[in-house]
Structures are given as C-alpha cells and as structure tokens.
Length: 185
Image (cartoon, rainbow, N blue to C red; front, side, top):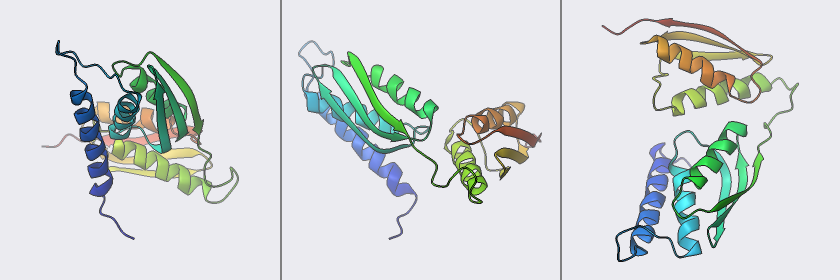
C-alpha cells in the first residue's frame, strides 16, 4: 500500500515526542532530567536514533537495564553503526552501550547486474538525506562500483560534500566528481 513520503518523518517525530513526554514525566524535583526507568531510557535512545536524518537503521531495537543500552538490528554501513553508538552514548543517563548491530548485506550479489543500480540508489539516498547539502541538481551513475556524480550545485562545499558522502557508501570503489559549481543568481 502506498504511503506518502512524509509518513516516515511523522512516525519519527511522534516517537520523539513520546520519548520527550516519558523523560519529562521522570524529571526529578531539582529540575534535572533523570531517566529512572529502563523502558524510558530505551524509548529515549530509540527515538533519538529514529529521528536522526542520516541514520538508516533496519528493524532497530533498543533494550536498557540500569544505564546499559543494548542495540540490536541492522544498519547500512559501518558509518551508521558508529553514528548509532555515538547517539546512544550521548543520551543522558546512558552509562554503557553494547553494540550487537549488524551491517546489512546488499540485496544483490557483488557481481550481479543489479549491483550498480543498488550502489547508485544508495548514493543518491545518502545525498538527499543530508540536510546540509542541496543534492537536487546532482545525478548519480555507477558502473562496477565507480560512481559518477554530475550536475550543478551552488557551492564548492556542496560539490566536495557530495563526493565525501558518495565515498562512504558501501560498494563504492571510486568516485568521479563531474559536478559543476554554478552559484544561483
């Protein structure tokens, strides 16, 4: 069934609001936020992971016990795994993070004819997900793991940022950056 593209964002916002309500309800009298309940801590961490625009977890679950958080599920790559751990560690009241995350395997075998389409799609998704980059003018093609970026961006920073993000995608062996800088007038 088709769901509008905003439904995932609305779900993430709803989860974040629920976590905030749980945390606020567990505030101590001195005004400092304290998460005394394992369920509240797990919900808070999971909400923070789900609202992060650059993290793409698959079936992520979070459990907590006395300040120790256990992360389970799949992430797209090692960068996402590191980000999930960092977000969890930065959550107030988290003492320790146990990482049981697995890096997802691409849906197609390495030598499959669909590999290039998968790589190009993952690169474009990563570019679009980055809030600091306007990737609307960037095209992505891939052949045998070599990604070719083309199109136009407004700044040299966007051009370089697109290349850096593309290189971080699993399956990319090299990046040819043909993006032109054409400031908007």
